[in-house]
Amino acid sequence: MKLSFSLEVKKALEEKKPVVALESTIISHGMPYPKNYQTALEVERIVRENGAIPATIAIIGGTIKVGLSQEEIDYLAKTPGVYKVSRRDLPFIVATGKDGATTVSGTMIVAAMAGIKVFATGGIGGVHIEGENTMDISADLTELGQTDVAVVCAGVKSILDIGRTLEYLETLGVPVITYKSREFPAFFSSKSGFPSPLSTDKVEDIANTIKTKYTLGLKGGVVIANPIPEEFDFDGEIIGKAIRDALKECKEKNIRGKEVTPFLLQKIVDITGGKSLQSNIALVKNNAKLAADIAKLL
Ligand code: PSU
Ligand code: MN
Image (cartoon, rainbow, N blue to C red; front, side):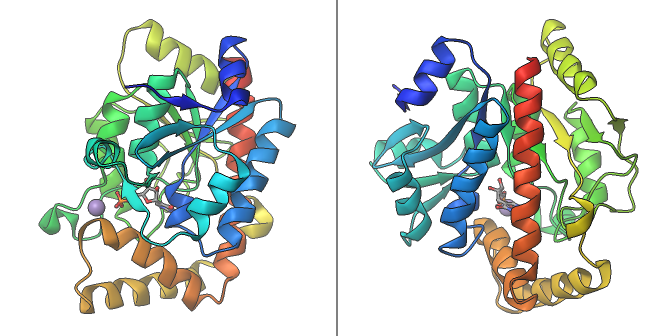
């Protein structure tokens, strides 16, 4: 099974230049068109401006792509029915020649195959609220337990059970390092109420932890939590209410499985009138910059 590299990414990997992987579920299922398309291009631009090469990952017509053209990003951004692909879905989508947008889990797998060590996204999946009954725990967590890629995110949205998500990551042996804060961030808000398991103000500490983890032969990923920039930090009350309403509707409509996260993300955008989308875009860009800085040190 071959990966299909863009010329830019192929060259960067051959020359051992820093490369940052980017996911595509955020494009196909995380934001509305055309903001998703514009954001994906902006994020790529930020990675380049900070001295690394972006590699957006997706499956198009069954081909696993590492590095997409502008046309391919536009296609994923506006085509309905692109599959959301985590570890479970990957072989089927490739085998049947379908289009797939990779989640954090799917993107980590492909990044590791391609030899890319750092990946930037918005938020990772986690243990859902009432997950102790539904067993809805994102495949992102088990992926982090086994695949050697460092994921830069803005923490975990409070659509999820943040405490249980941190517990699960501990069980799986995944280092969780928050950059420039002692508190683990909650995506729209820099505060979650949970202390971060690990914290540092130095990018060097993050890069050295990643290197040391693999030198020691410890399998799996690293979560780097990068709090949302202060000027976009969302009012906890407004976002809290939006999330509670979204969760209520999700339950009433009996939405389940892989549909839950995209449903909640869309609802929050609807309820906050697009204001949350602005914050979402800002934090993804912020993560792209930190990821590029880490990639340069590896
Ligand atoms: N959380 C967000 N934005 C996202 C996602 C999660 O704030 O776009 C996406 C990511 O692709 C993540 C996936 O990997 O949702 C997790 O989905 P699930 O909860 O079904 O595992
Ligand atoms: Mn799930």
